Image 1 (cartoon, rainbow, N blue to C red):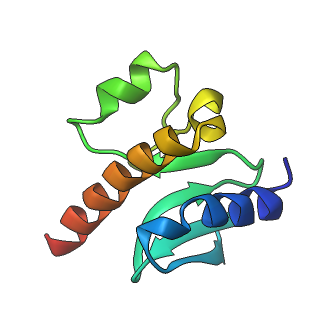
Image 2: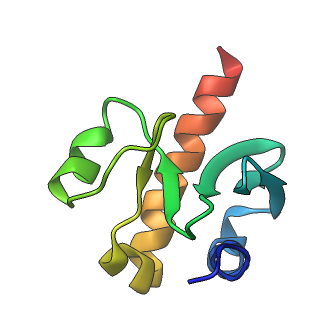
Length: 102
């Protein structure tokens, strides 16, 4: 999927998390909620969510791969299931907020 289409689709899927915005960066897009980046879409259109050591095993078990930062790819089955996507993204947003407070 085209990276801009993926970013906008992801933004729409996650709008219930708050005021989700998109910013072009690093050849892809960052997704933010209230100024906190919690998801990215890379230049290939792959979606990634912020993770912490406590949530990383979930990504590993799902076959995700790690981005160069603390972000892990979102499995296709999670992207296809709105409730799962919101759950995973909610955890990613909490992780990003906690990291920003440090």
